[in-house]
Figure 1 (cartoon, rainbow, N blue to C red):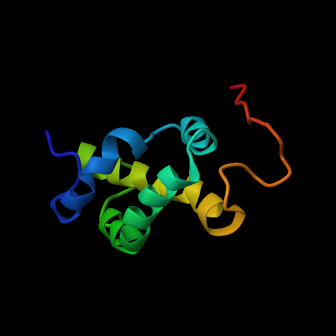
Figure 2 (cartoon, rainbow, N blue to C red):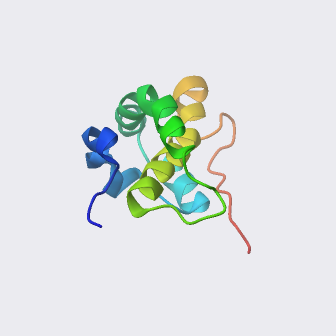
Figure 3 (cartoon, helix red, strand yellow):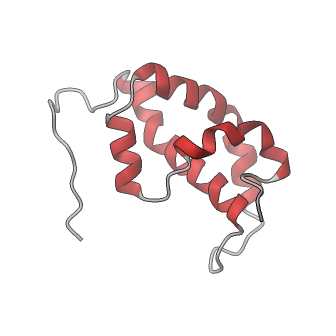
Length: 107
């Protein structure tokens, strides 16, 4: 399969290479190392489609592996969740008053 996203989400394919991040720690690093402008561009494209993306993914059994295009869509949603507080509440990539703190996963 060479589709990056399901047909209903083709207009968002330009986001996949940069923002469809599978690993949670990598999504966090993307957030803290992105500018607000970069996150806002992603957020403004993805947020209005979030409900539709969730509805689309709900057709799948979460006990089974997703097709590649649906997995990319899921990863875009996960990244949207990761950046949403930075965009909506903090208005900066890092939690306010956290200085240069970076979360590190040990296992």
